[in-house]
Length: 228
Image (cartoon, rainbow, N blue to C red; front, top):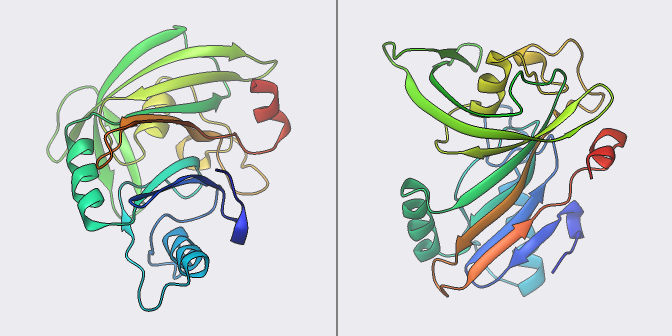
């Protein structure tokens, strides 16, 4: 199942879906930087592999922040895209994230509820305890999986999918993700990544109806390795 052609780490592939383990630094879809997005790399992979003439259809189901690694789902058919979008809205796709944070949260597990407001000027969100104009409710659950010497590994289940949600909500309780300068880390990671990884996904295939359960290997680095 795993292949790494074009530096592409394919976790699952069938007629309707492509599930990729994204590297930190890859962008999920084109943006104003003009850098080549992962969606284009996946299209090239499909075109090469199946000798497809003409344009390749690929729908982006959800995004992952550029410095984040882990699972990204793309749809190879419009039918799959439509159904996956509905499944996301209905919250029936279970996604779990891993985050390495500098300071251990006071509670080893908790549910965080905030209202997040995005500032498009600096592409940053702020967490508020109560609803304010233009804010959106954000809910996540976390638990501590492991304490390392200077860091802690948290597992996060998202109930909502807001802009930079995990980063801003954890930073708000003083659990700052390693390397995340934007949300309070004192230093960046050398490669510009942050230690946030979309680790697991669990859902019923939108077309075949079989259960898809996938775990994405963490990036290779001493701190992620220490978490395993």
